[in-house]
Length: 423
Image (cartoon, rainbow, N blue to C red; front, top):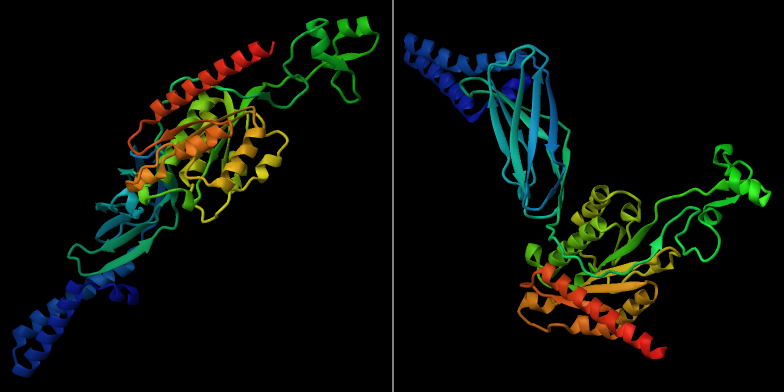
């Protein structure tokens, strides 16, 4: 009852004050009929508080978000499953689900006619043009009487995550390099001599499963031979994103960093669908959650897009290059960069030496401030052996990627001519 009295609304307090005032004035003036009116007016909020205070309700909430991983600009549907396991509460239930402001306004629902065993589902949509990871919830519940004199609040604690990934652009097929790498006994190589059995079997080792014994090779060599463990070998690619605050210009969704993240997401999806196992490396180094893994394209892109959804500008002047010490880091290297200086150029030259093929999409970051210096970063990288193309605020990423393919084809032709002249 004490809690219910503390939940009196402004209307309830006004009724109580008006009733008490009427009773006092009636006593002073000797008006018995006015006393009855005052008692009735003052009793209304007290009776409402008594009913609300004695009501017992046990609400259960299950919140689901479908899908939990959406692209920026695409909607997601939130479903709220509510059920009552207690007695019928007095009055109405007003529900408000809290959502971050970037997902829209808070959604409110008014429910009535709640009995024991009552169940209801309500749905609403959320949408964000900003990438990131957001928490939907918790939900607040307000119990009120029909006259709006008393209102009590409760809150659920559960929340559900929603990850909004960067927008992606379908990219055309262009010539790509890379190296076949992986783990296991079998490595792809040309059969210079011998048969296929010679490279698919090995000597028996203690602990090998006898079901893997290759009897034909064992009979020919006179030693027990077993089949090698075969694992799928895929071409690896490292996607490097320069997310230093000093390397980009602009703010918010219109900044060059957001364009770089969107470009990196598009390249990650493109490479995954072309059979590459892709890992993400940022200016702060390699993220263990997005390291190389062997999965199909759909499962491959999920962790990468989730990692790119939460990438933020880092206030560091230099790039972290410890990931270059990884002995298995070879293969294709694709970099998405902002502005670079002479020190950065040396680091990118070092990256080139640790890869079999290197491509770069350089952002003309000064164009985001209306000060064009188009192609400066791309020219610096091209001078160190990279195949680079420049992306501006009004350029289409698929066209820039196509230009990168033309540069790759031209480099391949030049290499072929040089090789022929050397012969």
